[in-house]
Length: 164
Image (tube, rainbow, N blue to C red):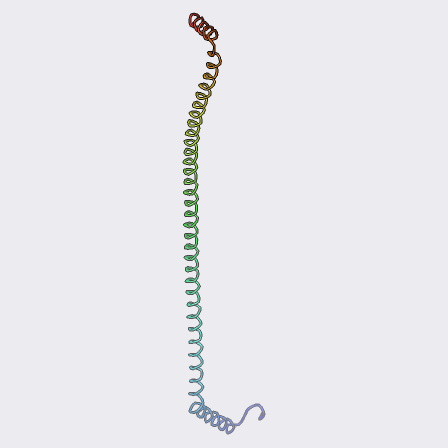
């Protein structure tokens, strides 16, 4: 049974060695180990805080970028709408001006045509009157060259006057 139960001297020396080792470890190793663990814990906490801060900053930046992008899209849409409205207005104004100018040109052309028509009619009347006078003069000279022809013409005019 000696093998199973140790002797009291052995227990004493083992206890003395353990307590000595424990004292040495507490005196020299325990504080640096705790300091290293505290330092590691602090650095892990700082890293986690920094990661959380970075994550928040990234979320804020992403939200800000999305906001700026939405504002830019809204501004782009506004500018495009204004440009479209301005071009439509310019087209309408150009069409109205073209219609107005066309109507004015038609009126001017009608006035010119009417003036030319009146001038042509006056010229035709003048030419007809001139030709009529020339023809009449030639006929009268031919017909009235002898006395018999003059008497016949006068008789003919008198007959025509009585009939009318």
